[in-house]
Length: 360
Ligand SMILES: Cc1cc2nc3c(=O)[nH]c(=O)nc-3n(C[C@H](O)[C@H](O)[C@H](O)COP(=O)(O)O)c2cc1C
Image (cartoon, rainbow, N blue to C red):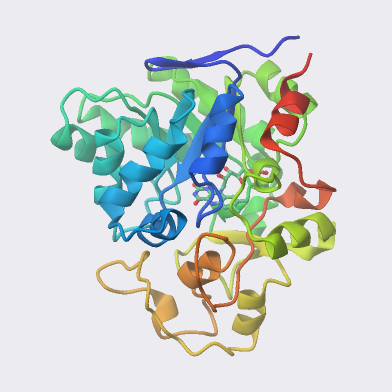
């Protein structure tokens, strides 16, 4: 079966494939641009763009300016460009949303917490924006909560991403025992989410977490999904902003090297999947890194638990900045990957990967 296109709000993707936003600095303009050129949605991550875009172009920019610049650079060859703005990025969330609307990005994708305020922020900033608003959820209940809240502003999600327990980055559950439950497998979460999506007006449902091959894409389309979001496959491309060390660790990773951290874990309070030999994680196991907060992207009311507790929490800001070629840091890296990262045997170009996924 030929892959169908995917229409969301005012744009149509040639292929129903979204490259997942990957912070910090993994999915920047070069990766997003390459994906958009091949007919998928290229997605920038909004994390730490003040540092990362400034380094990438060699000019100091604040968060607002950097977001505009990154979107502009991703759009150079045309195609569809989104931006991933995590709710957990309390410090810059509103600025990132406003800049993205001003840059007329095609979609804002928002998760790592429920993006309950997103339409309110967007509508207060611009009445008739053309950007699609897409929440990430991990259950039908979460989608129901989002839809009810967004309805207060007269807004229905333009699409929704259902992210299951095999994904990279933060996971939408608090305990490892939860992600091991049969009912929380992506294919078992999908029917409930499709039901809520239909109830609120035929919202396209895009699945994420463990999608690796064309067969996976076909299988989920048959189950009723309208598209897929993939992270790990795009992490392992030449165009991604991961350091050589990170790409090398991914290629060498065995299944047992990939774990989910609960405690010690992320200061954002969600499970986090990573390579167990990530230097920042190993330091946390020994409480070897003195607690220090000099970035503050996840500060909530001025506080992050990793500020003063280096035993139970790793410093997610500095750990992720250590994984990208666009940061200049001596801090040790924290390598996040999806469960299927052990299947990566070599680094591909985005074109090779998209050809593999879309060829009939
Ligand atoms: C290196 C890496 C960084 C990620 N960063 C983010 C992020 O900043 N925001 C987010 O919503 N999801 C993030 N994710 C999740 C991806 O966008 C995607 O949904 C997920 O990895 C899909 O699962 P897969 O890796 O099995 O394809 C990240 C994933 C990886 C591998």
